[in-house]
Length: 181
Length: 257
Image (cartoon, rainbow over all chains, first blue to last red):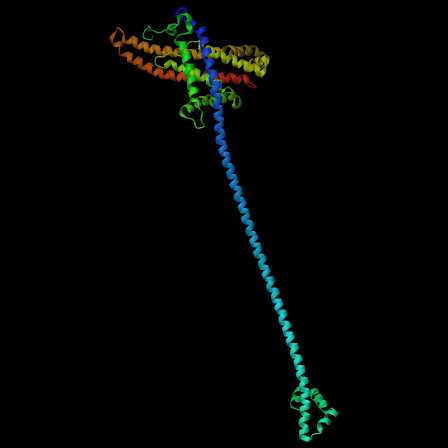
């Protein structure tokens, strides 16, 4: 009991060995338990916590990136569709113009053709008409003259070609005077 | 025990009777308190970390903050971010052990810290001493470590005759002794201080001169203030011990001076 007091105080700086041993055992025990079973698990928990947080962040980032990519893709598709539509419209416009031109051209041709045919027909008919008229006029004139001067004149006239000559004369004269003669 | 002691208190107040006489000083109040400290720490941490969860419960959070405080605030800060984590478990254990034993100094009925007996701080200081020398020798080799710790680079040759002995004394003698004595003396003085004011109050109230007696209230009030002061000292000394251990470890692992 009087261990420390006896030596007048300086002894307090000298350790009591049994206490050192007790302290050593107690401390080593604490070290073993804490350093083996507690703190490594704490490190694990810390790591898991960091993983959980960083994992969550990473997942969110991934989702964000994916969404962005999708949006970009949609935008691209939309733009593509728009340009495609514009191209189609332009083409259609060009096509319609071409078709119109073509049809106009065709119609013009058709018109020309119809006009040409009409003209031809007209002139052909006129020719026939003239030819018919010419022969009719001859016989009519001869008939008329025969009636006036006598029956036999008709054959005579034929023979001598009087009528043809007369008609040729009429034709060779200007139209205005011919009409009256 | 305290009331039985006389006034003024002295070193004899740090002697405790053996509870089992054949075993001598191995079983006294002091050693029982050391066991108690070990038991409290072990039980607390095992219970707190029985089922660790990502989102901690209050107890788990408390245990984690003690470890995290030493790990991030001391170990990583002093030794370095990568190497520091390796030493964090030991430093945290050391901190808890010293802190709990220090706080026993102001816990009612316990009222004494085992660290007020040099045996406990001395043993802890020796572990630190052995550890930083071992780490230094392992990193630099025996001769390399001695050179590393004794010879300062960039000093002119004649100065080494002066500096090498100084460095030797400061590194290999003063470090462990100051470490042990600082903790011991703080706890010893703290206990003595509390005894002075508490027993002083008792002495005053029993004083023969009647107008000394009310002064005992002042004495006890100061004792209460001192108790709070001792709480700060207890935490501070545990922290200082750990941070010095970390800094010695760091100096042994350092590449350069």
